[in-house]
Amino acid sequence: MRPDDFRFDLPPGLIAQTPLPRRSASRLLTLDGATGAWADRWMQDLPSLLDAGDLLVFNDTRVVPARIFGAKPTGGRVEMLFERSAGERQAWVQLRASKGFKEGASFRTGGGTVRVLTREDDLWLVELPDSPLAFFEAHGEMPLPPYIERPADPSDRERYQTVFARERGAVAAPTASLHFDAELLANLDARGVARTFVTLHVGAGTFQPVRAATFEAHRMHAERVTVSQAVCEAVARTRAAGKRVIAVGTTVARALETAAAGGALAPFEGDTRIFIYPGYRFRAVDALVTNFHLPESTLLAMVSAFAGREHVLAAYAHAVAAHYRFFSYGDAMFVTPMPAARGPGA
Image 1 (spheres, rainbow, N blue to C red):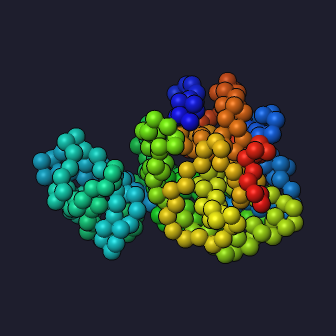
Image 2: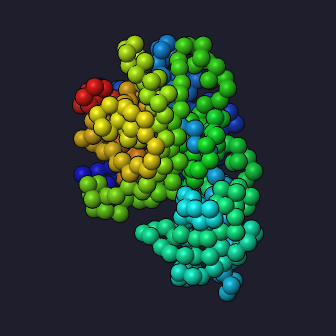
Image 3: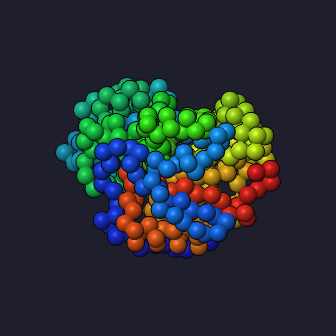
């Protein structure tokens, strides 16, 4: 299967550059993976699509102000993007500069001097003046995705963060959760919908293109995941009652499916490189809330594995024609699976 099997035309004007004034005011496109039928709804309609006893699973990761600008001794501009901690004062980062870097080089930032240690694939290991999270929290700015063509502003500190973000470590928001505010959560509570939380620290690799000729040859970036015993018990209770487990976002789907890789959902803590594309059978997810994803991306492939490539691309074509807002600050989908997407025990 090739990346260009997931190509679609998207007018640049549909890429949301700012969030709506109210989180839950987004549109919601529903897609039935069994039939391919879609319907135009609103995010406030989500409670009516769920039943009492259904379980929403959210990602409680917190976005780090992960972008810092600096300067080389020659005066050249440097952009550094945090990926993950690697020790007391070391971190893996992405580095960008006009003439590249060499091991042992250094550059200045507003928080002190950063020394470049070594490289592994697209990432550099650097030594920082302070512990990684403290350094970036003090001196960084919010790492808006590359398709948002404006500098981050103070409002992004709050809006590019979910209302229940608590575990620091992500460099991109779990964007499906950005639509949930206190009003919507209260309406879900009133409906009797339960919720629980996993943690997946979204890495900058989520925006990297697939460079391999086929998906089978593509190697996913590593992301840190925690799925607790409490989550496993909540999922088991939900399934035993005949209710659905709804992953809020592809990051949650990846976390749950990583924890279910042995055949049954079990507590998990560690890195995941799971890559879900058509042909995959889901074990832990019964429905999916997700934003719209980039053409030819691994995330679009995951949604297609859940609801069928033809169904998803047809729904995307409708979303384009209906002027939905795309990507991180855009609108959402509620997706149910095609029968062939369900694995043993699902």
